[in-house]
Length: 196
Image (tube, rainbow, N blue to C red):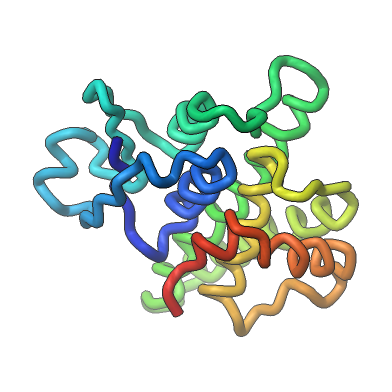
């Protein structure tokens, strides 16, 4: 099995952290490849990272699909619970974490461009999504990286620290900050930390 990755991608980190949590990371080869590489486009028409290739040669993308597959491997308890209120909570938290990433990744590109009114409005809209998501997470009870939701939220907060240190998210979110400080030291997060 191999996972197409970029060391700084938070979506890849989510997949890799889950693999560590499930104890299957040693079975997965990390394939460092750029999104413009012909070999990536040959297996994924979207030429996106992450992309996952199973031992049988099946190609999976994007991170929710890859995580569902990784969660089916190994003997550890699943991080995506079966149909139940716990499943819906885990998947909703995953969507909230992914939403933070979806709002922050394109914003990085936008701030490097000339700042007309439309671009400023777009950036403000994306910042608003992150602000509301953080407020929603402050009200949540999060676990010790037991579900895909916890893992995704931790990866999203880590990405905010990594790419937006000038926009600290901890003020006003003491419960979330305390949770993150606890889980960031756990193996799935500690072993998937992006390079400085």
